[in-house]
Length: 382
Image (cartoon, rainbow, N blue to C red; front, side, top):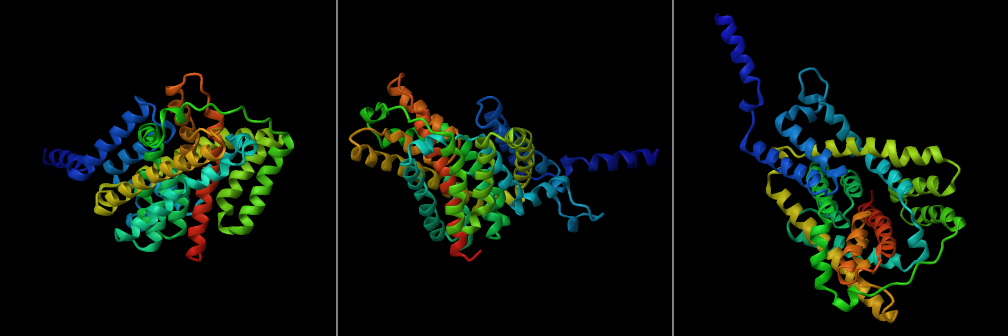
């Protein structure tokens, strides 16, 4: 009888209830909120569902991301090996390949001025960098945090790893992906605050047709130019353009389908769950995390505002031919930011169709954020 009681006692004490802290319960609640937003509200479910579930798992069973040195048998937890692929910049680069295979750069090629709008939106990154320095982050940590302003999760993870800020990678990645998912909530008030009703109702002319040759040459030329200037961007820009070349060449359909479907979704699962698993209560619930979340919001808001304001300048210069709303899409959250530009414009005039025009700055923002990361790496000699 004593043996049975002892055995039952051991089983009971092995349950998570005896090991969880109030912080773990709080993070479990946050994970459930993220799952609600993803499933019920439809906010970037492909990202938030695996991230939220990884967050749920690590706060119930912390050893799921334990390193080999922390375990009794020398074998790390399942998500530790997923997370290692993040630290090595493998998963972010593969994500970029998949994005390239899924993306039509035609709107950007047809309207090259979109490059300027994508560049303007990167102002949020460098504004947040200066603010992060003022808040006490060292220069490399400030750079890793500020890249959240590009609303580009893979680039945020890539830069944090390259700058040796793996301790901040979890909060940075969660903040970046959360703001990507919350684009439809965060951006519209900013867009409306900086534009007039008349500006939001501006209709833009249809984009010119883009030839197949232009679409094939674009990824090749961009790779050569950008990587010659900033070689450290090759893992991101190179994979983005390789995926796009798969798509536009028309001769490797199988590679295009694999990169944009099977591989892309496998990588999203690995990256999402490992990012979520980096948010244990001990690592996440501290002042640094709160400052990162705050700085990410500031960077994202500044980037949105800068894109819209530069759009207003172009609107004046072109005599009202450019709707300033498309500038907000330069923050890189593809294609959500472009859809928000379309939605806000349609609220003023249901017949207004801005989506394809906004896709130009949107994909330019992807390139711009990768370039901004390359600039930081060049500054620090990485």
